Length: 164
Image (cartoon, one colour):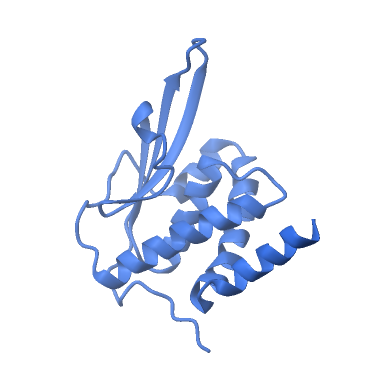
């Protein structure tokens, strides 16, 4: 157990400073998203963006692509260490909020499918530009039933700079 903890600490400090800070931000937004998920969907839906509106598949600059990849990585890493369940919808909402903070537009997709036993399953994923930020692993298995586009202003580079 001690070795495992030392390995995790080493892995944390091997991350860039920006990614380490983003990891804490992701942890915060995953907690917020988990609280939002517990609320009636009708109350949180307005904060997810414009219903049935997709943001453009183009328009990301190099800096924004780097930011998207960092946000995606931070969400994935933080979701593994939260004491609460941080699954697809929670991860998509958290990533959307992180991108919104950086003035990067995104689209949250919700889909449904049936498993082999005929039971209904749901999945959520987040896209920005052409990149899937969260939920890419199984999104192709689902039929889209809901879309929320969060259009952000295009001012600045879209990146929050953490000072040293």
